[in-house]
Image 1 (cartoon, rainbow, N blue to C red):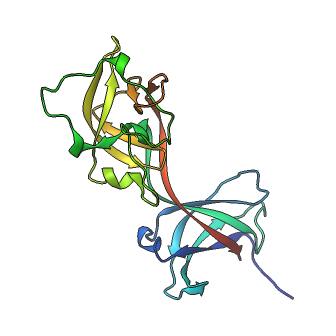
Image 2: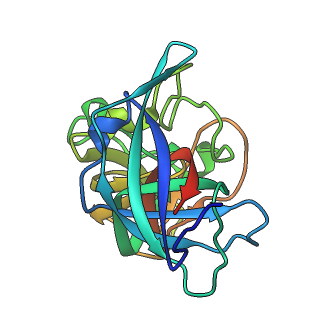
Image 3: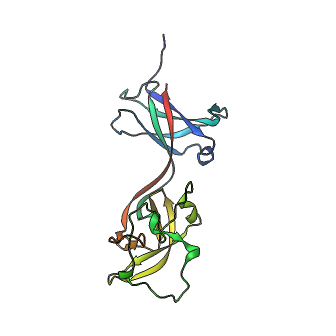
Length: 217
């Protein structure tokens, strides 16, 4: 016979050794369960025991956190998809990551502006000469880790000007702009396929690191 108190559940998430340095005690965590209709359960990282397991030559550490279970929706041995919130931003100005270019490639002061009719746009995620290049296995966000980037802004007359901006939180799709750009301005996201310039939106941004875990009492 097994006896358990299910009012509070402990999630045991296995995290690879490469991702463990990104975690810290007290950070926000949330997860969903299979068949849970995308409902999110929230908690805070409590412990990372220094006793890993090795599966197929991969070193995995257990990250433990507790979550209240007043309605008994969680049961033992459930599978959970866990997200550790590394950083977050509210009411953020967002642009597609493909709109950004490394600041080192900035045009010298006094350079001629490019006419809007000569610039073309690609869909987000495509490799292009104007936006962030995504080499195989490389994370495009590494180019902007110093917090500076360039992008091309379209004015009301259709003219395009290069502008340096300060970058904040990023995920693999979007980047938060801390300064240098206002909501509603239009930016160019590429130079190959013809399309309209993408409008800047105001929203929230999260950078989670995902792993798999199982709930235990």
